[in-house]
Length: 245
Length: 327
Image (cartoon, rainbow over all chains, first blue to last red; front, side, top):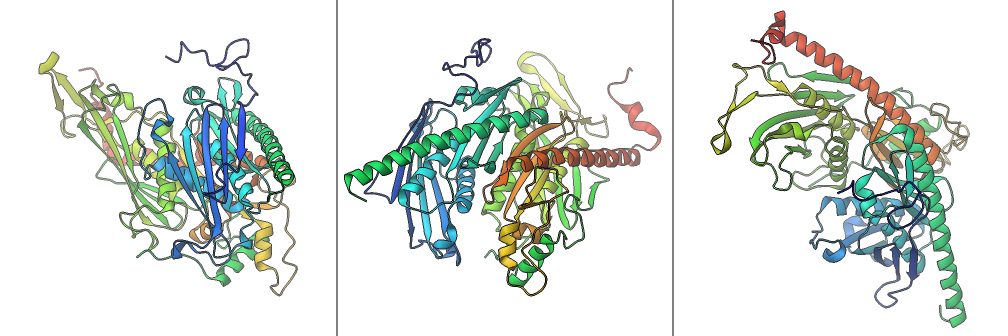
């Protein structure tokens, strides 16, 4: 099958017509669930759609999770059975889902100004409604926006992007077909800096190619940061104009 | 009831203060691995005992014939089981997966299974009907940090050491039979190992966080941090990087990255969890350091394999008895 699908044409066009360094169509909305949660967001990166609800900081539900000097973050990820082409129910105990939850939790434990809310808990609920590659990156971006909407103080945006390497070509922001055809990494940076909060590589890659993949992913993260920042500012302005806060 | 392994505050401040002065408690340099000892069982093939400092892990490789999965008729099965019992440390519960256990098992899966260290197509006997199922059981005997690294070395070495029984297929069509030859009859066959993945864990310490933890202690100026000259990068001295942390260093670290590399200069997997954010240049140099560690460790594994071979193969009889020889 892979030989019939041209992942990267000789003219430099990918399956959806993008160039190597273009991210997918990025749409985000903040404060989408104002009643049911303190902060919420919906992110669409290409065809991948993720909804995030944040509740907190609040009284912790489990005494065992209470940390005396900082806030504890608990992440729950639900992948809808209709999110992929094949309808498949994924149990909560699926190790991939648990691993993603744990990664997201650790990323935000450092990104949130945690010492301001000791003995409190922030609940992050993520719903993956449609999957087309880049699920972890969409989840991280959605969580960032939802936390901002909830008013949780953070040091900076946490932005994530994927980058893959097809032979010698670096491709940015992969969709599902591209992800299964080449080694790729997911990177999350702190805002527009060079600091990396998360780096995940799951397929073999030659070491010499790693640097260009990381550089591409980093520039993708910075670009997404700007896109998210625009949306946050637009949202903030509209709230000020409406007079409600 | 799992017991928490949190060290006391006074231990914390001591270790962190030593790190700001570039001293590790066991007097290693920041890039130095602990003493690694790999020994193979003299009776069974595929049983490896790995000692990384005081961390001790045993891996056992076994194989049996079974039916392949319906959607993969040409592939054999390869299962890695990494259940940690309270024998390793009181913080692990038998039967329940703590977060650490999940991380370890996922990283071993990615390093060895997903990277294709074992050629599963070579395990096929009769496509769609019979194949070899290779099973790697890792037993964690002692936890002093670096469980992932030790387990990865153990499984990789075990796969290289293991010999499965030789088989012959007789008959044709549906009347085919597989004859499994015991070791006494025919020399057992090694597995098709395509590459040897070695996992290296780097622990990050945010010097500013460490300094604030020890600020206020009497003595010389604690908040000054020296430059990081072991790992080459551009002027970023705010994060100290330790290779192969002991349990105490693991409990105190602010972040970690585990890189699996092999001697073909390939990186099989990288997992940098959240916690402290690190400059990207530093991550790249860690990956390069991982390749050098992988080369060193692979050399040691091959050396031990040769010694084991010499011990078993007294008088070179194995070479004469090999099934591939002309009759």
